[in-house]
Image (cartoon, rainbow, N blue to C red):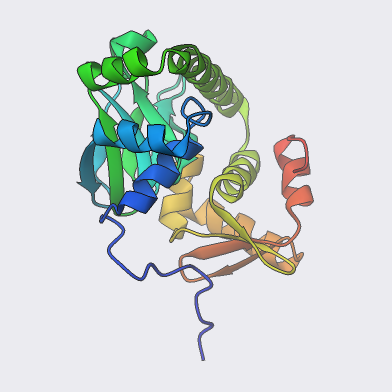
Length: 249
């Protein structure tokens, strides 16, 4: 009998943004984190909601930057291009994460591609909407600039590392990033709580699905990971951190 998936199954449509989900997500964004609950409600009133489907583009690199998004429900992946043109995973974003930019934050075009990994709901700010938030909460501006700048630096560092890293390093790094962003801790493992097949992991890690399958099979035999149909759990993340050359979490 096949094992039951350990992934969380939403009880309602993840594209449906309840007020509670919206305010909770906004409060987790670094530049809104210091706002009071009532202030977050006012910020929410200045956003526009957008439902997304798995595989849908949120924005594309080089296009005019006209939206700053916050993930309320669902998961979004952010990718860039290495010097050789290979797609590189830059980030995987769950509820409470932000993506995109605006001229007010120093960006006239998007620096990366963003795609929906699952269906979900985004909260969007146009330039005028975000300027209105800044007028009411001036402290948000500096915090937002710091957060956006840090994200761009981190993305560039990942591109540079991936350009010279071997497939096992990229796969291990991908699993660690996914676990960090979307991991659910259980007694003896961390489940990456998003449905991902071998092809998905291969796309994120920038290698062939067969390479992902071989790596996962070897790590599974060694007790490093546990896998099933479209799910992966980490049992010994410190081993993956050693392979990736990253500090153990």
